[in-house]
Amino acid sequence: MPSSQASDPRDKLAEKLTPELALQFGKLAGSEHRNVVITSDRHPSSMMMKQAAVAGIVALGGNAYVLEDVPAPSVPFCGIPYTYHIHISSIVPNGLSGMEIFNQKGAYISSMDIFNMTYREMGLKYPDFSALGTVHYMDKRMRLSHTETLKGKVQDCNCQVVLDATYYRPAKMTAKLLESLNTDVVLIKRTGSRYLPAMGPTELQDLARTQRSYRNAIALAVNSDGTRVAAFDNVGRYITSEQIGMIFADYMNLRKVTVPIGMTMALDEVVKANGGVVVRASNSFRSAVDAGIANGSDMIMDTDGHFVFTDTSLMSDGIHAAAKLAEINGKMKLSDYVEDMETFHRLSYSVRTQVNKNDLITNIRKIIEEDGYDYIDTGSTRIEFDDGCILIHLEEGDDAVTISCEGRDKAYAVSLLDIAKGMIDESIRRCN
Image (cartoon, rainbow, N blue to C red; front, side, top):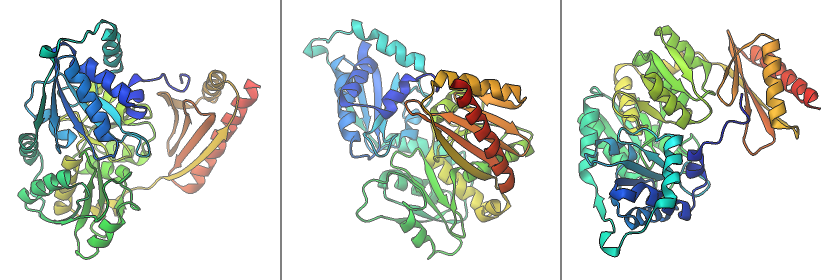
């Protein structure tokens, strides 16, 4: 396990973006007269960051194609011959918006690509005013192409859907797709809300209340850039992203799924029943996408509502996920899937320590190997057991060691937590 995972330069863009940095990467992306597509979500700071990126693109002679009110998953279908897709969105909801950069297939550009872009900065020169780039504002055609593609991927739904319309554009696109697939859609507009920092059951209480008026309807919500989905089943229960992933794995007979390392073991049970395997990347969705593309996964997902349908594009598509959930509910009620799911019990514990992290990590690894446990090391360490697992995570820039344990029953989860605590205590003792 490396020292709290090697720093990924993409994390700085996604989580610590400033207008100056947005301008810088706009220049880097637009240099050499490149075409760059720009999208954004509805976060209050996204417009500021987007304008900074656009200014950088045109300042170096690039062409900025600003797709107004076009969900990010529609970009791979836009028909523009672009080099980069810059997406400005709220990766950290309680902070300023961040930047993610994708290629034409919707995959994240690599850490090395980010490094190479930065390396070119010293040689950049501003052109004369007559050689500045241009800004193009585009809209409808991209959504239509995306919708037509999804129609070929989703069957008739034959059910009723109550759809949250806090974000009208992605919701309206989702509604039109569902209606074309024989779905009765009820759009509810959340009055007075411009932006939701999350899409959990607390934030979606209005949607849940409205759903109760429609017997056997499911409720769906898509976030403001169309990359994530949230759902309530036909009896009004909130379905977690992990449960949605398990439903997809079962219904779609998925054989290879890539997830961040902390995803529930219950998903492994479903995919193994299909004769498949769950591949675990490091702690972020970005790392899961990188790994899933490399290993040819059928689907890539995380615990925040991101789902990549790799046979369609390599970008997370909440609109596709919403339509697929409606299709599944029309064939077999979502509540039946939820009730049949195996539940693993989870427990968490955090230890704060001032010991040297490199020494702590070295000792944790030695103790695991001395005890003869099988483990996965992707920046976090996951120890696998037949009926449970232990996940040990050291957060970069923090003095906490977080332990998460999962067991087929609560007693087993408690016993695993005791084992993990003992490992951390012994590691700290050896450091001292």
